[in-house]
Each structure stands twice: as structure tokens, then as C-alpha cells.
Image (tube, rainbow, N blue to C red; front, side):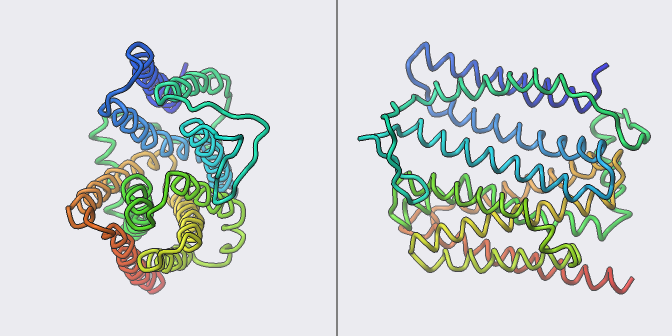
Length: 358
């Protein structure tokens, strides 16, 4: 009998998403091109998969892991996820651009290869992407596990489950504020990576696509560093103060990227963003694991994810205004990110003081 989490992994995040992307890839092979709306649709499917995959993965991890090992689990997930992002980003950039004269520029470094790599069409890359989705179904179906703690399983409908999460957070206001406010960096990061960053590279830095691809590598390297070391570095610091420190650190990076037009500042800023975003996510998830029962963690994270989507929609709408498309005004998006991090830090600190007082 396949349980609920396996169904989500196998049939929603892999079978459905893989089939959709594969169908679009075959359309591209038939017509030798893809219209823009289908490329955007693949992007939307990927985001849909992302928003289901990670909450389910964390809930699954909590279910099979002893409480004292939650921090290590979240670090391992972060390292694995970011390591594959580095490889996937570099590989995708290589396939999209190909090589000339056996030379490839990546992460600001010129690499010499023993052979040339031909440029791939976007639908060929989508087909490879679809195959990886379907390949994972076979791998995941082989996983056997036993839950560490057996708790009551709620089998009500989706709306009632969401209400359970809202009710729990209403009774635990500190967890609600921490979970929501610490999510602000993640919300801004997703919008920054997919909406702000391409325009920033083109309009403010006046750079090419290889700089954009390189920034993602620096971001992923920072996230890997965070996954390996962040809990060791912050092990004696309260989770609230840890998140505040990381938010203030990335606020400095955002402020620097607003005013300084240097590639080293840009790359360093993305490295810091990778460290802080991953670090906040590890600290945040570990805190929730330690304070929210496993049979409610999925409901609680669904509430946070829903609110996070609203925040991202607001930021996307804001950065879509004509002001940010004029000249190099896109850099002011990072200034807004600075303000958002400062406000989040203030709210977290006030909540921390109330927590200590109580």
C-alpha cells in the first residue's frame, strides 16, 4: 500500500510534471521550435513541482528521523539540493550556449575543453528534464522505511487540513510569526532569481548570459557551504537570533548590489545570498521540526507556503512596474530587499523578546 507522501512524490511531482514537460518537448521536436508560452508553461510546472516537492520531502524526513538529528537532516537536504543545482545549472548553461574553440567561460573563469560541445535546442533540454522526472519514480519506489513515531493520520479533505494548520498556528503565535517572517528571505530570493536577476545583469551590469549563469553557481556554492557548516557555526545561538544575523548579513549584500557596479560585488552578493537563504531555511525548518508535531507539519507548512506565494505575487507585481524597466532602475529592487530584511529582523527581534519574557 503506497502511503500519501509516496503518492505525492510519485504521481504529482514526478509522473504528472514529467509527462507535461515531456509532451511539450515532443511538440518541439515535431515543429522544430517552441512558442514562448510553452516555455513559460514549463517554468510554471517546475515552480508547481518545487512548491509540492520540498514541503513533502521535509515532512517525510521528519517522519523517519530521530528528533536529535533534525538539524543534520536539513543540512543534508540543503547540500544535496544545492550540489545538484550547481551541476544542473552549469550543465544547462553549457548545453544552451555550446562552446566555441573548445572554450567555456563559467563563474568568471575561462575553461579549456578537449572538444567542442554543440548547442542544444530548448526542447531537447526539456526532454532530458522530463526523463529525469520519470527516472526518479523508479528510484523512489524502491525506498523502504519505517516511521520513527506513529501519530494519528488526518484523512480529512484539503480545506479541513488547511484549517487544522491555521488553528494550530493561531494557538501558537510565536511559531506562526517565526515561520512567516523567516520565510521572507526565501520569498524574495525566488523572485530575485527568476525576475530581478536577469534584468539586473542586462540593464545594470550590462553583462552577458554567462555572468547570469555564473551568479547561480556562486549562489549554489554559498548554499552548499551553509548546508555543511551553518548549524555548527550557529549551534549555540538562539534560532531567532541566528535568522536575524543572517538577514542583516544579506541586507548588507543587497545594499552593496544596489549601488556598486562591480562584478566581484555581484558575485560576492550571490555567494552571501546562497549562504544566508540556505542558512535561514535550515535554521527555520529545524525549529519547526522541533516544535510542530509530524502529523501537523504538512498542514502548517501549507499555510506558510500559501502566504509565501501571496508575498511572491506581490513582489512580482511590484517589480513588474514600468519604473523597474526604465534604464538601470532594476537595481532598486535590491534596495527594497534590504528594507524587507531589516523590517523582518525587527519583527523577529520583538518576537524573540516576548518569547524570552514569557
